[in-house]
Image (cartoon, rainbow, N blue to C red; front, side):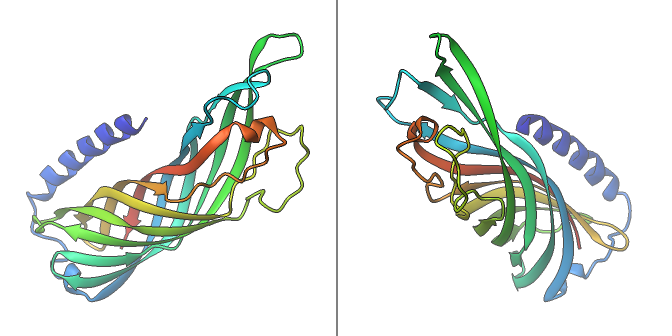
Length: 235
């Protein structure tokens, strides 16, 4: 899915970039402004870097698991501060909606191997602080790189909620510290600047809250959030 978005994005960028060079530069002094603001809307994929314990703690109950990506979206605002000609500092308060899906490979009471799934809602309030490393502007087109850190708070976390031992739901921490990197492309339109970004965020910390009495939880060694973003900015 990420490769598909990358191919589509690059195709769009080439088309828009080629057309942009045939006309005079739009808003030529836009990047000379010290501070400016904008809006963000985007698509995301929640997944993880998941590691199960070896050897399995209860191989007669749960014999494996995986965490496929789930689709979501995000909304937010953007604050941009010029540090140098090719370097800008950005604060992007956003809210991201998504799901975490866990597939368990288990042995039922009859000794059959089956797969069961559970979904955990995720609502992230995010406060990313990013460096935007720009190339030289080429008429109405300017690519850039993104790197930064982010704190995210999960409003839907089950950390402090009661869950029965038989329930497949997992406790995941509501405080997530992440690092981010990616790339983006700015297009200077007649009245505003439009950007397309492809980036990923990864947790520093283990988000899983162990519950040794639950076989669905006890199988997990580490769980770190991984989120892919396709973001559109309007400045």
